[in-house]
Length: 317
Length: 302
Image 1: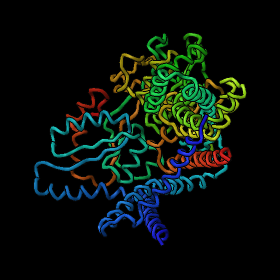
Image 2: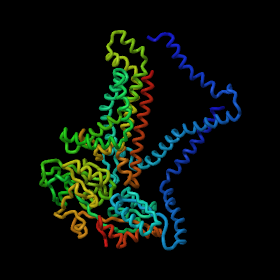
Image 3: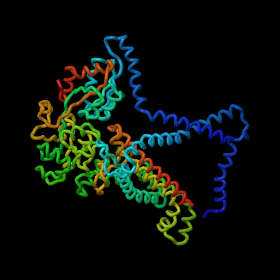
Image 4: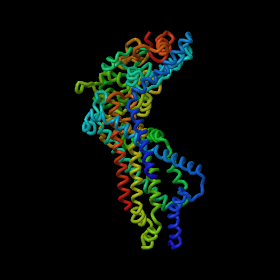
């Protein structure tokens, strides 16, 4: 339904920032010398602010690797990464149980959180009436603002006993409890980014599909979702990032036994929990080995970011 | 031209960043003098005012000793109001290391020193004794366990309450994180250790839940009817049930009399010459007044 005029205005809107860019720093504005200097100072100040993030990333990366790699080398990289036993008191450091624990908990969070998140996003962007959007969206946004320790506490007093009751297991502190909590925690990320992606799909796609006789739901699944897939993928990967990095909530509900996960209702310990639980007490090689866990975690997150960049780039083509 | 300038600026920032990293890599060396510099200044003021000391005492260590050290510090404030006692509860092992490395004036530990730590030449002051109570849910009908059965439960050899005379329910074992003084002392006393490659390794059952602190153990036991855990005697109250061990109730009197089998010392550790402020605090802790405070919740040594 877009007419030529509308398209024209859109094009103009897009071009405008480019034009503005040319005007602002240029000398076309008649200005005093002081004004130019002042502009420069502000510019440098902004640049410094922008550098903070870059510097932080560099410093943290170097620090973690400098602290963690010696221990990994001392223990032996293969022994460290593939070792199934974590017994700091006997200087046995194998982080495989924690790596698997982190992967399982994250997978669980995806299985629970991603479908709910994407369907919520579809509902918000395509189906919900205005008044309902006004309730659902703030609720989801509020979810993002709840501190993780509160999630953990909620899990401990509600979800853990619920698992004990309904599934008849002795201790509900488990992989399942951690997955449920993490699944809820990644919802805001998945919902808000997916919704933005779905809303960014040009209206003409939808109109074309409807005009061809497809139903609304068919249009959503066959046209809109595929068109928004790069954004939705980004939402999922960012959700994974949140789940992998979550610490406090997991500590409270996961049971934290440093063992290979055996059952959905058995305890797990994640990489982040491992660091947080033991850092206060650790010294010597134990402490370094915890930094080593940090290195593994860091590599995880970096891989995720690379996947995110590559996949969104590819999907965007 | 402009681009070159930006790149130059960026490189300078990178250099600054690497300079920071250089500092960060030697934290222990950086920290040590930090605590000593203010003390040097304080000593100067001491000579001017001879009757009352001023300054700061830094104490780091066991979470179990922390409440006691704080109570003692509060009373100490009446005796020496000029001295600020700064206590951090981070864990026994960290306390021992802090005393050794000099990052604190006094380290606190709630367990005996390990053979490796003995070699550091620390002075051990036993300031109190503490029992470790084995705790269960108040609704649990078990009220007496033998030391051997407790050991077997924590090793995972006994898995069901019915094997020790209780209901037919799986036992949920709750332990503490590696490095905790309470866990170290408990495993040491209860023989929960196995040798592996010449090193002592915890024999705790693999799928025991790990609670992050004595309070968390208590909360877990309160929530789970079939759980068993252990906490310092100071944490024992009416909300949870401390079982008798070999027929002996976990009470202050029984620990003092040497009857209760799971007991440990509370240590304050110092190295070499003490600052006048730290010495004043230590003297107060070991004095009759200090030991009276100890005996309110724990077991005094005098």
